[in-house]
Length: 352
Image (tube, rainbow, N blue to C red):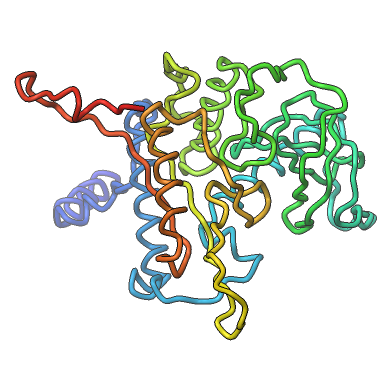
């Protein structure tokens, strides 16, 4: 009886098609000793597949190009990277502060969180800066640990006086204007500042830091960018090396883009004698404002660019009546290869 059943089983196995027998194996089978390279490759392929599906679900590029009104709460998804970077920096700082104090996150269903009480706009407050954001502004946590004040022109450890400009409670931070330093932090060195407009101009933020600290800050910015936006798991994020230093800490910018606003003209209906067109400020924006500062020189530019800035300011002032709107001036230093036999010192050397 046993022998006949065994032979019947053998015959049933022989009549199965090869296709049926191959279905036993899963297409997703992976050996236990899969290499790390194989796992990383599979992980990256899944990311590409997910991104393609997101694009298909969003209706393709044509639909993405359609203009739509963007609500403030949609700025994160709309790709406002400056806002997104700042919000991430603030959220991560609050989380680190809570962990350092041993506070556990409040579980939903417990007592509701107390409503934040924020100072009125244009109120001056004293804050202590904890770190520098990716955009170069200081970040100071509020006393209750649930809000961050963004204070420009400050460094970690600074105790500063700041004036509140506007609140963004949904994102967890407030924008402030720098007033003064009450007690400097260990990294602040005001002797490094070479520009008379530093502290008001929005062109740069880190002149009060040593060059070594500036390079470390730039390395950290790249490190955070990979962690926040690459979509990679921490295990495959590459290690960020040190920032390559420049032999120059000033006079190294080969491009500057000063601008000026709309030109105000005298009233045509006025019977008074003809008035000259007023030359508007030519320079860069004030920090946290849309006003343009009149800046005649920038020590970050190369010598050639700085000469060009003075010449262009004079040219605009002399021909201001020809401008109906504002404009941006592009100043760029370029290098051209000239045969030594064709070099004319008078042509290629500025006399000033």
